[in-house]
Length: 156
Image (cartoon, rainbow, N blue to C red; front, side, top):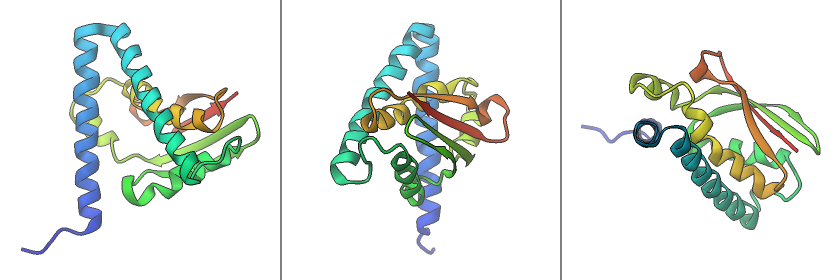
């Protein structure tokens, strides 16, 4: 039997990550409802903030440069597989279009709620807040809600 390719390993890892996200989000939803989901979202945001601070320290993210958030996510493509396009980058707003998410099919097959990305993607908001603490991220379009792609919108 041959060894798996790096792409095979990445795909298997992303299925596992998506499955773990589904398990903890749906367990919290069942046990604690909306209050629990908000708490998990905040924990994810704070984790993202730490990841973002590490990104600033390593030079992968640049304080005050919203476009560097896009570049940071693009640099992670080989590890995660998200396909992202830059739609808008100004000093006050960043908008990205996610055309491929390696987690969506697993989320759906494991029965995740259509709002799972609201809680999981708080990590991405935290990453952005390491660049500018005044940023908030919304997801006006989301594949889990039936859209053909996701929009990540960071705004001050």
